[in-house]
Image 1: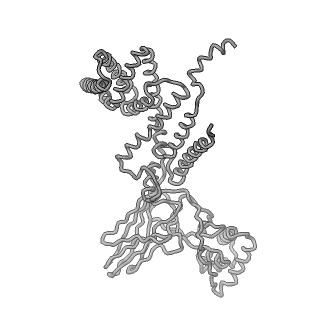
Image 2 (image 1 turned 60 degrees about the vertical axis):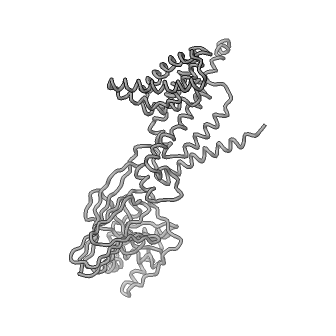
Image 3 (image 1 turned 90 degrees about the vertical axis):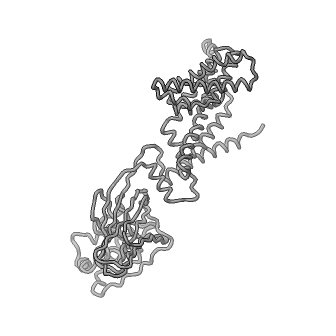
Length: 503
């Protein structure tokens, strides 16, 4: 006897792979587990303005590259200007250029950002060098005293930065601190003191997102290296940590805007909050990423996607049929005919489908009984039944159209070959076993088809089977396990009822 261990290992691997794939899909690609979920997005306009000097001008503008926000859509408006998006290893910049710029110039950049929740920024392997700042002679003694005092009260880079920021924002400032702040901004002083202790720190430019804000400016913040991550400090507002509504527009310590051939340059931001369907947003983000190793049906044309949405429901119907036949013991006419009928129900709706199915089968059985009296060959008889089924469907469609019953027109979605074969099987069963068996198997088929339709027509199920392909591995593992079941069906247990009564 063969060992069943390899089989159970295979089933376990399929189940685990299906669950893991679905979780990866949700976490990595932000595919929502439930349909209809909404996500917030931010539409941000950046307006770059400067005065042209009647000579060639080149504008170099930093673009957002923050892991906490995904760029969904971006475009620029700059009539007469040439535009290039330069992508370096860790920075994106837009470069506008023109041969001659006269007077006031305005350039626009629009981007739609979607929060990703990845607010923790991991530092790279190569940290920026923290060169000690050369303090002026007049500030050296004051800086050394403050740094020494704060250093003694700290235990790590982060605690040193915390103590230092609190010291800078202390209402009752010492004379030493007042002296240093007279010639340094709080942010500059914070970074210089950190660098003096060779702690990597850099000034970044963050944009605080607020719905319907206009003419917003970037805020200078500081990133401090601690334990493999960059910690954010807003010294001006005495805030440590990162809020969800802060996007780091420029986070590498470089300038945000460089203008050659112009004066009085500045950039202002306007923003608007919006909500979008989470699923379509995730799909757009995946399409923007263009990952060659991402196998998804979203890459197919829309027509093929629509086709697969129907095909991928079949495993659900198959699972229902296997469960109801193997575990419950319901008899059906044909093994997977209920699945095809359920697919037709999705097109016709349940009530219209049931009525149409019963009418076609009933008329087909009557005509089939006449054909049996002609003693035709099997192939000819089945061919005749197929042609008759087509006539019946056409007849009922015309009747429905004349009566103004638009629901009746959907009867054409029934699989004609399957209907003809069902009529043939029921007719043979009627002749051999009697009408009772026909009603039992026919009723069982309709019952199973109805349950399969309810499962396949569920919006949650439709969402899962199309967007999480790993679910099909789970279905396969469950079907394989049920295929090993050799015990009694639930409907067979009634045979033991008399024994239970005697006991």
